[in-house]
Length: 114
Image (cartoon, rainbow, N blue to C red):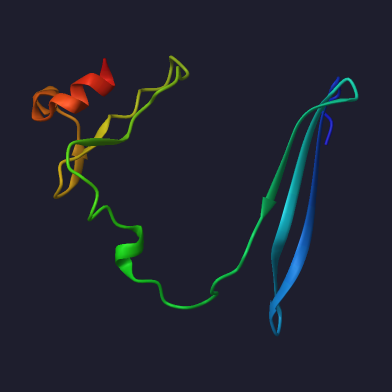
């Protein structure tokens, strides 16, 4: 895929047969080029452990994480015409909007933010 200039991205995908009629990527290769010179490469290998089976809800939950963690926030500059998303905070029970008083919940958290 070229953007009309000196930058080119190459992507290739090798498929694997999983079930009777299911094909899924085995390996995906990415290559970025600038003016014909390779700038970066990435190789993603996928091992299918299961497919179309129920997954325990706990797999995607936050239970077990220590409390007083930022779990989502805008770390990078965004379009100034769009509102910033609120910082989200895990208090050990639920994810909620961050409050300034949360900074006093944990000395280690204060050190990470500063």
